[in-house]
Length: 213
Image 1 (spheres, helix red, strand yellow):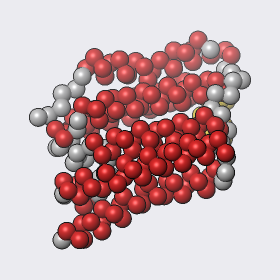
Image 2 (cartoon, rainbow, N blue to C red):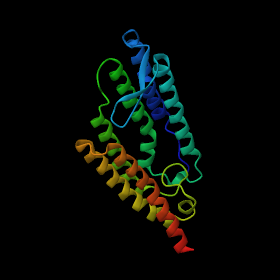
Image 3 (cartoon, rainbow, N blue to C red):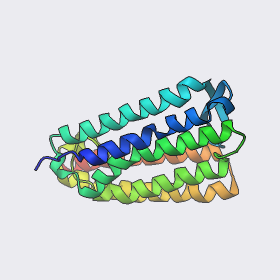
């Protein structure tokens, strides 16, 4: 059964994504001409843009990404495999990230350190844990999950790969979460964790495919 778009939810989440533009207009005169739009792993601003782009451009880009994700979801040939829980995640992931990013941008611009290194790393760890819990619940589809040639052609491969990937993502998230408090080799821990969560499921899926053929 094909997924039907929830028009009211699309409207609500779209307004939520654009809401920071209204907030930016309210604080327009208090915001500097150049405001931070990018933060490193330590939560430090390392990229700046004109406030016109930050206030109107970024939310617009986020909105387009949101619509594209929803479009891909309903056009997915295997959309019937996308559970209601995963659909909720797809509807809310961009609005959530967009609001968090814009709060950080406005806070930093107005003199409040909203995106501290600790909070940034805790956030990434929590996101990975949440994704890790969702991965084993996914079924074969073309929009979300470990979409490799071997997982897409076999339900068994998809199921086993995502079961392993879920555990790895949760462990990786816990590692980032705990390391945010001790601050040991922050960049190395982040990139090694990222490498493991990306490569291990792929290698496992390939080996599983070889053993089945």
